[in-house]
Image (tube, rainbow, N blue to C red; front, side, top):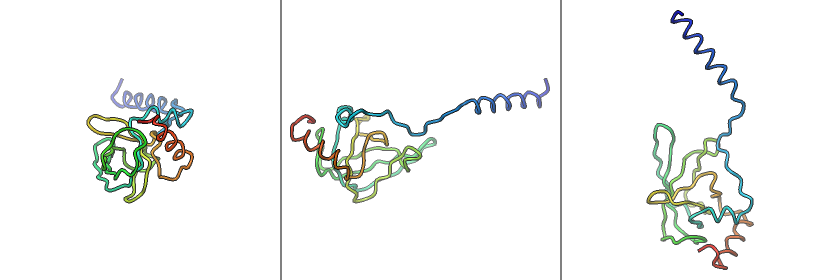
Length: 145
């Protein structure tokens, strides 16, 4: 076989393999049945105000470490400030961007010597009344500590 024919054959095989892939799920998360199950699978949960965020880029993705002023702790033991590592960007590229001074409920898990969160962790702006009510009730009942 000539070099040109080998190249064409490889290109054709690659195209067939790519076309054979039917579905790609970018940033899909495993579903949780209840808020309680999500809470159980998380190391720390707190209400925090975004203090500052620092981005870093690698070849594969961008990440940030965001510092939060802890306003209320629902699960775990935290100091007044906590740094959380997370992918950066919009939800379309699996990232989360926190805006300075926003109040956010953070669900994070231990990651090395710190904590990390992602779009699948349920972290969100402090506005979901069902989640807030559950966390306050569970925290008052000492179920989360």
